[in-house]
Amino acid sequence: MTEGVALLTVFVLAVFVGFEVVSKVSSTLHTPLMSGANAIHGVILVGAVIVAGTADEAGVLVVALIAVVLATLNLVGGFVVTDRMLEMFGGKRPPADAPAADVKEGGA
Image (cartoon, rainbow, N blue to C red):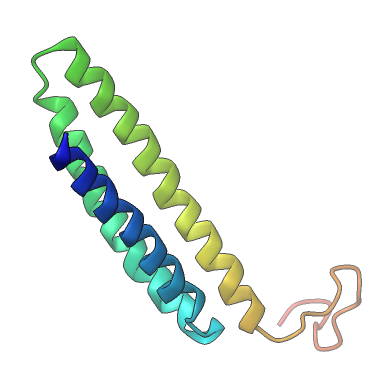
């Protein structure tokens, strides 16, 4: 019982420390951090696929397949967030219906 309480205590402290560390990161550093997190999630996805491929019991296979789905969602979501954050640093784009000034008609 005390081992479970110790593990729960470590988990709760890790959540608090992680929240405090991430909330103090400036917005210009979020994109590189997300890229690193995406690389880690890719490794997790590969590990989940390996576990699913070598599962001998039905329970292990179900948990491994759930891990594959969650790791995939986490990886794709990380890339979507990174893409949106990179768009914030881009310049203003002209509206799609605005005529292009330097486009020549009639070819070369």
